[in-house]
Image 1 (cartoon, one colour):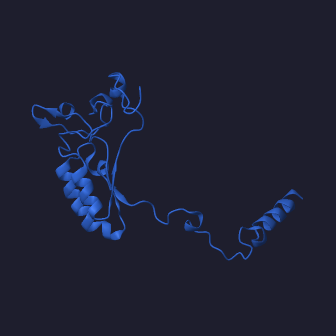
Image 2 (image 1 turned 90 degrees about the horizontal axis):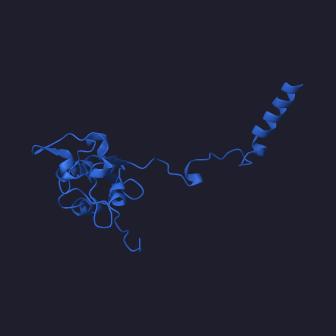
Image 3 (image 1 turned 90 degrees about the vertical axis):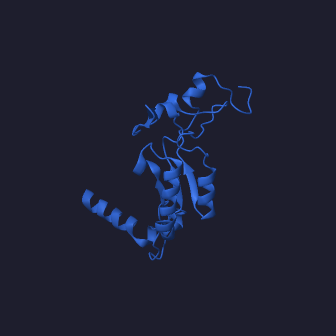
Length: 165
């Protein structure tokens, strides 16, 4: 008896009469629900370079990205972890160390308000030249940034810009 009741309920509730589309003909696609048909397409520096991406290399990668990937719908170019590391944290005896781990929170370059800044070692011209180039080609530029206030800003008791704190 239990099996018959379950089977009857299953048949009734799985029939087109009870479905979102009474005709039973609709095919709900991701677009119907406001979702993207494809995921965001882009390049992330951490996948190839870990924390060792620098301006010259990023510009070279951007050229290759624009030539090879952009024609296929790729639009995001993201610089990931390490762009904010202090030079002394990645240099030893004048040579750049291979930084494969996440940057030490104490080695983050911040301004007088605790806002993370690009490392002069990795991005001596800041991000503007790279962002301008990508934007001119119709691409979107992204940066990896940890949420919240950097630990070094808290340790130094730096003020929060635009507030009394």
